[in-house]
Image 1 (cartoon, rainbow, N blue to C red):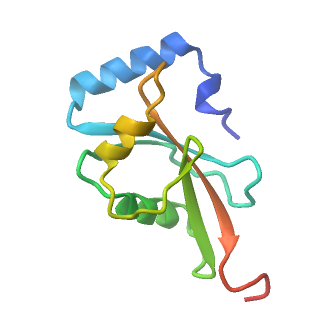
Image 2 (cartoon, one colour; image 1 turned 180 degrees about the vertical axis):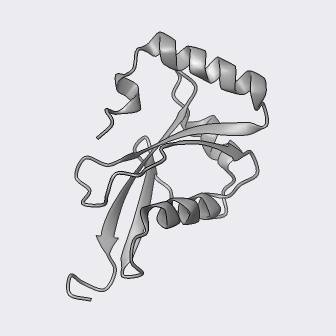
Amino acid sequence: MNPPFHDKPLKARQDLFKSLMRQYEDRIPIIVERSPNSNLPMINKRNYLVPNTMTIASFRKIIKERLQISSSQSLHLYAGKKPLYCGDTIMSVLYNQEKDPNDGFLYIRYFEENVFGKNA
């Protein structure tokens, strides 16, 4: 299990952010991490560079496919303390509201909730 990205030294995160933005200025740098109280598996890819114009719904679909969760489970995403319910919001708007002020990354946590009950 990888330690949370925030556990890396701030300077290393800032340097990585600057390097990514020099190469991919039209992308949003996102770190995806499992919520501590989630029973979902650890995601095998947690660093993403997504287009500014991608919607939250499209990003949620990518994460759901990566996790290979069943149709009876609903995937919930949070940026900071903000739940990401509005699927048509574009990532650049979310990024400008919720990016980490220290290192520039957008941190998104995920967790599950059974949609049809435990025995579905």
